[in-house]
Length: 90
Image 1: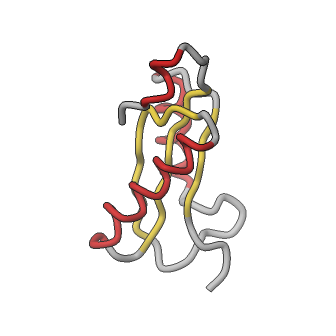
Image 2 (image 1 turned 90 degrees about the vertical axis):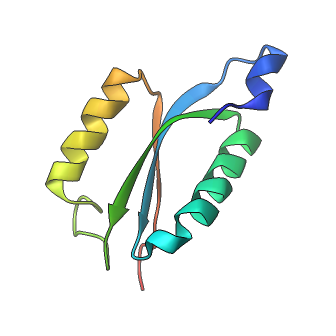
């Protein structure tokens, strides 16, 4: 998850990326897309969490256990942001 922009001396916000999809075969494409979006937005991806869901959970988008996992990881890596990639509606 190295970011070429950080080499230019810019201070980037750190982000935990959360990928939500049904199909594991899509992971590499989605991950590449998210990392490209991060680079364009001057955000450094520092960790990735994957969640397999048919549809988002009401209220939290991911399950409550996953919310706890994301919260703990974001604190551990001192992330400024959590970016979630997933379809809001089907």
